[in-house]
Image (cartoon, rainbow, N blue to C red; front, side, top):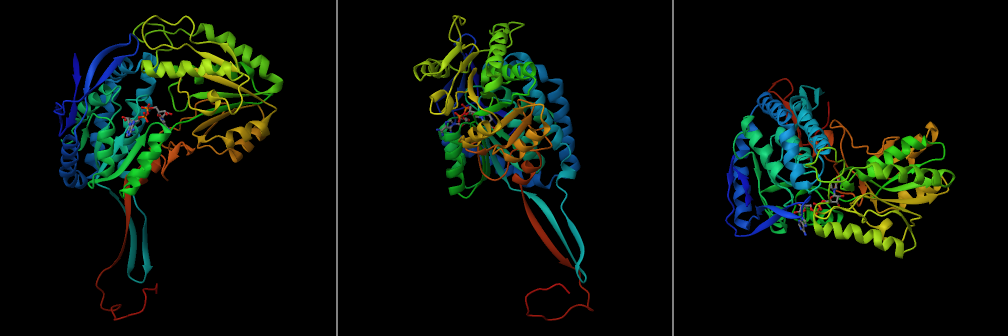
Length: 494
Ligand code: NAD
């Protein structure tokens, strides 16, 4: 049985806790590996190593740091297929989707290659006579990343690229469900010339997370995962004096107005609801269909579903793989069953005719869904699209703004005025206009509103740089006998 261990101080460190987790092959339902789960002492060791590496890394000049990021960029680029294959094997997503994940992660490494520019501060000459003032962005120290199963390669890249380029050292705790791709990238980082100890990985569960949240040498925590854990991480980390950004779950609504291009909207809804088996925090899970076009739109989506090829990622041609675990498959299936009981209409039931082995649920479509039904109120995180019929813009907007989550949303329309009003009105962090999954490019920042993000700074991009640095302002004067005098008043500009 393959064993996946920790990465500490530039090498694989085999766990000694005696505890391990199961890594499944979601396409067969069989265990394919065991992952070590760290003890408190192992987490402490990783933090101590990262702390020891910080002074030298912090002092490493910007062009050298950028050089390491450029080399990592080349290595990840050259190993795209290898990383994608690894993550696909443990996550279950098909290779084309996994390659897309690596590409979107790589963007963040490319962004961090510009670190000399990104860390520039401001400078004001002659703020007072003979006095100059400038600001500096300095790294925080040891920072932690805690990541979810659904983007095992990309989400760590959201965090470590900027964190390390800014001069911090990192301890990452990946999802214990699919830890291999993060380990592979750590090895590439070493090949890129990153000094040992700057990037460390501890495999683990709640025990490791809690230690990271309470340890006095961790300065900041970046978390991505479900809302209850995000809230817990935010509350616990901030209570312990840490800077925390904690991204949570989602329920992304796509509002289709009566004037939309219905074929384009149907293609977009199918792609965004069922891609990666719906296990994306930016997946569309609710379709708000204007009454005038709802029957047509539902029919078009229904027509498209049978063409989606569902099966193991290892077989060419499949477009949608299994869910992550048997437990999660059963939970997703439960929402489909529950929807009928609560009065909705299951138009396509993804529990039918699934492969015998593995954790599969096929694309499912539920119509006549209403707030108050579980399939509307809760995050399903599977290939289930709920259709809520709305009168039009105002109705649709009210539902989106009433929702507890505010991660992503999209409007489909040909009316530029309505789209602009939507951007203005909607209480969601990432908005698409005729774009169903508006994940920001790496030079903007990623983050939702409401229960989709706890903290003040979004992830990656310019806000990522802010999160991983603190600013210092220097007010400076060189000795000049002409201006020197005793003055006990509060400093004023003169
Ligand atoms: P999760 O919350 O179960 O796990 C995330 C991380 O927290 C993992 O590393 C896990 O080991 C750890 N963890 C789990 N339970 C814990 C506990 N009780 N105490 C401390 N740590 C704990 O999430 P997941 O199932 O891996 O990922 C799916 C969720 O992540 C979905 O809700 C999805 O919407 C969300 N997500 C959000 C974003 C975003 O950007 N907002 C992106 C990706 C995924």
